[in-house]
Amino acid sequence: MANRKVVGKLVYWTSFDVEGWNVTMAATERGLLYVGLAEDAEEKMKSWLTKQYGAGEVKENADRLAEYANEVRSYLSGEVQDFTCSVDWSGTPFQNKVWKALQDIPYGQLVTYSDIAEIIGHPSAIRAAASAIGKNPLLLVIPCHRVIAKNGSLSGYRDGQQLKGRLIRMEGNSFTSSS
Image 1 (spheres, rainbow, N blue to C red):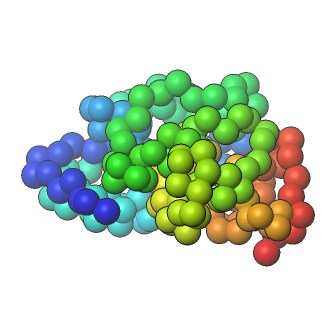
Image 2 (image 1 turned 45 degrees about the vertical axis):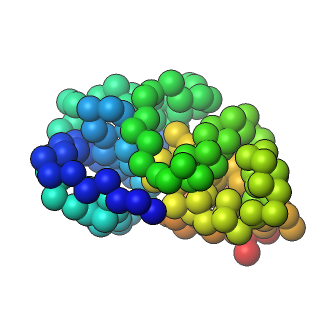
């Protein structure tokens, strides 16, 4: 991935709990940049930001992220099914193409990694699509939890299969197994 290390880049972040979810997020002036759900999401976010932005400045500021936080709260509370917030796309052109395809997966629907490869016009690039999905920095907003293995199992998820299964169930769906 091409790093966008920019001296002076200002990134705001916050974390909060909602409906039993531990949410950590970061944004720039351009839009939401990172959403994590794990207990260690703050450490993961800071590590990811260091890789992506290097010398950029990171400041905790809940007020700057209030609009994004409200959308995430509404989603996790079941009040909305889609996100309308702006996104600061941080991936390679291929990753961004995959991530944009993920945004088109309807709430409550599940697709496979091979489905995503087909959707983006690269049906033989299943592993590359899976790798891009695994590098998605915007959990929920780019709903990679809706992608499962061809055999119906959950497969991987950055913040753990337990959280992936919980999100799938929250959206009213089920899956074959957890392995």
